[in-house]
Amino acid sequence: MYDYCIVGGGIVGLATALTITRNRPGARLLVIEKEDALGQHQTGHNSGVIHAGIYYAPKSFKAELCRAGERATKNFCEENGIPYRTPGKLVVATSEVEMMRLAALEANAAANGISCTRIGAEALTEMEPAVTGFGAILVPQSGIVDYTAICRAMAGLIRENGGEIATGVAVDRFEDRADHVRIIAGDTAFEARQAVACAGLQADRLASRSGLDADFRIVPFRGEYYALRPELSGLVERMIYPVPDPALPFLGIHLTPMIDGSLTVGPNAVLGMAREGYPKFSVNAADMSSYLRFPGFWKLIAANLASGIGEMKDSLFRRAYLEKCRKYCPSLQLEDLRPYRAGIRAQAVSREGKLIHDFTVLRSRRVLHVCNAPSPAATSALPIGGMIYDRLHAAD
Image (cartoon, rainbow, N blue to C red; front, side):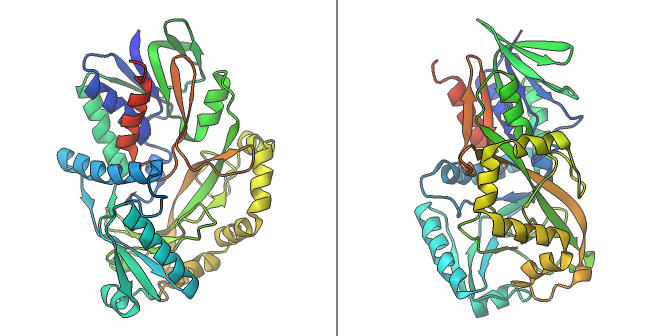
């Protein structure tokens, strides 16, 4: 009998497990991951950015978790010898409308206690000669890291603290009992006093199979990236972001100097046809059926049809994708874009057709299901793990 079982070996699940082993020394803990390695989905398929939190509503969970996570992630890297860099981020306005949105972002950052500096057009070009715009804000504390390296370090610490990690084990459901929970994985069953499900792209399915009313669906959105040819790896020093459209949930196609020295551009946000199909045009009929049969999906599509068509165009036509980049980096050419891995975002959608932006959990007697841990969950993983621990023990 384990004291705790964590299902899901992404960064949120591992951060939760690490928090438990630090706060409950001697407790028996098991992490179960269905893949053969840790951090293989959202954790290992993002742009590696350590976000500062300028985009999020003041005093919101996202803002507070991101601010705490930015500091905690860097501290964790320093304590465990994990390379990270803090090149800073420039959010670049390329129109008068975006200049007004930039002012709103500045006000947001100030309300969240995040340092940023307004940069004029000339100063922007001096700082980044390849970048052009009406103006920008510089967010100096934004960083870059390899989150799978953080996962490996967390796993090592969990084991050092007495925890166990089982990979290649797919959990089907939880069965609540009077004094424990059974975790069913095919013909195998594990028992624990409490469990946490950090199932990411499979969160709704695992909750439903465990008998909970999961009144939402995970809709996969593909984030497609390109790597710039190696000769352009020094094209920019900082991360270059567009000003996001407040009507859309995604931050837009950005240039990111990666921790390995390469330079990537992306991601877009196109409706996916498979939850875990990373090659382009991957199709999974069960995944598609899951959202096509959900009324909230059709309400979402109706409300965002124009932007959805635009994202599809960017996905199908590399030149359309390039034009998004050329708004702020006009020297880029089609031949500069090289193939790179895609990511898939687990976007929770409500029955009303709204994108769920907040951290969301469901509880049964002995299981806490993390149903939505939206971006910037990787940056915020350590404080999210602390929050999950507190919720597990709220009645102690």
